[in-house]
Image (cartoon, rainbow over all chains, first blue to last red; front, side):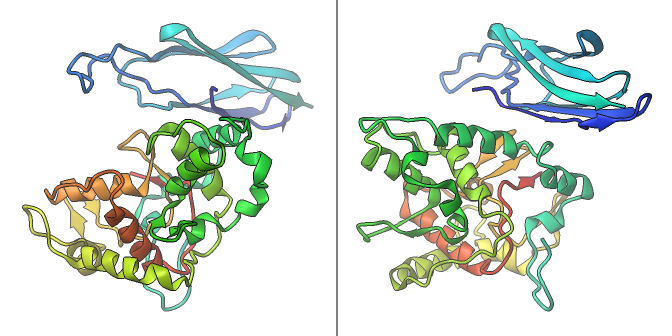
Length: 106
Length: 237
């Protein structure tokens, strides 16, 4: 059960600059902390976040262990055409989540 | 979340900066909402010997106002129980499922989903007379000096609320937003966890997980916050 919250406008004017915000549930375990047993808890982070608009990549970000749990990403894009904006998170332990929203550009 | 008129009580919400207030108010930026969403899925998931989900017995609409009046007496009526305790009890007694660990992600998420139904309602502890001795016990703990620093809850949260402890504003300790997301914890946490934090902060020994003392304190604090706006899932620094 992966939890994602996305905040994107449902409609936009062509050429308009819109803000896209994405929040995901993830522990972002740094790999530097010892657990209760005294052993280091293995690193478990999201390594990469990408966003694409109708399949074409518009934003990419590499994550590091210093980024907090449940990372929140906000960025801007120019509304070009109607369709689907997809958000994809990939990381350690085979983590891969994709979520998309529809947008109507007039 | 401000209180009306001459009421001088302040939610912790009012003591934090505009950026954090905005984070709490925006359901797509409030990380607590991730857990509410998770709780919603767990609510619908059948479990245990009866293979029933929470939602098979309870309509979520009926949960409106529930969190704003907990803790309450348990059904057998010998001790009070908080919302998370109630969920755990329902899980073993009614669903006949394996118990959920206290303060586990599952319990906190379910509690957050239920608590979220009461958002915006006034805190309204029940008038049950059986709660009175526990409320008194809670108040006694609140006013009792303890720990190596020899502080009571009241010394900080009544006498010095609004002043600074290191760089942080001391809140009035009204439990308006639990379970809530503390940025310091990077996860959703219970009021019990907050109380344990404070106990450790004054270098007192934290009570065991299932101690009645926590629930007694919760009853007193909720009564103290009676009428204030319930805002779970809150966000706090």
